[in-house]
Length: 483
Image (tube, rainbow, N blue to C red; front, side, top):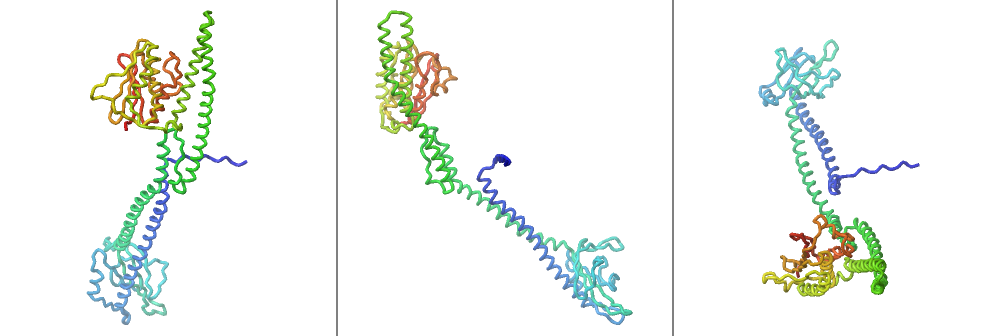
């Protein structure tokens, strides 16, 4: 049985940050490796140069020591000694001893060669050491030194080879200063190059990920009802498979939505005729009987059939107002003042039957609505205004006043329908725009009127909102962009 895979932990880094990190990480490793290699090379080269100088000084000093009889003649001119001691901060220290360890000339604080060192005539031996304090307790010169030791043959005594040791030492401070400067002069340009590379990589990854960001904005900026395919040709090669997969998903969703809409539209069309017949038979039956119990039942049947017919009519209108419907795309310039006057005139008989006073507000010369045009589908715009007026007549009640006003509001046309009815609680202002949501149980509404209004207005680039009217009442405000 295979072991279950552990889920990968969530990564909070952005894709851009991960790309930059993976590009710069090898460069940082190379920077560290380059720094270590530069350090080793600088130390080696500086040591080689310093050892060569020490070796030359030791050989020069050795040439000035000449054996005579049973002793040594040391011919060290004052000028040569001045050269060795020219720099007080980095001077050469020297000593001559024979046999090795018995001081003859120079500075006896220079440390002796390691015990394991075997004498090699005329072949310098290099080692690091610390100055040995003299009898006074002071250590002349630097504490840490680099020493070149040169063994020279000094004849034989009783058949045993005698050796003379020439040592030249120099402080390591100057040498360390040189390789540190070399390391610093090498790493500073590399660090600047890494910083410049970081900026270039960050800008480059931003430019490289720009198509992905455009694709994200295109998806984020869509409305939930926009199921049109994404543009695959504008995406990079690596993203085209993702775009094709998204388009396939959108196409499947669009097919399901279209199938549901066709089913709803077909069902609504099929139900309209029998419901109309049911309403007619209920009205005939009400006129043909005087039985109170039967009249009550027939009245309830008539109201239910009327409400069902109203719901089906609203569902058909909502289907026509959907973004995918052909009616939404059929638009032309619409004169709003004429459309509002026509809709109000058509709704006046219904308002009179409900006992409501419906009219258009008088406009001053400054607010003359003449000439306000919008690019819209006149049938859908009419339906939206009819739904608003129908709700006002239905819920404002008998004796209410309903006023329609049209005026310019900046670059928009503002249509308002206000009444002095009971209104809607402010907490329900946003909720009543949802489908099948009603703020009251009164009337025969189905909760689709304001949802249809919002759908139509939004498809025309406008907005719809509710405002309270003092002391009581409701105002529906529709704003549409002007041509």
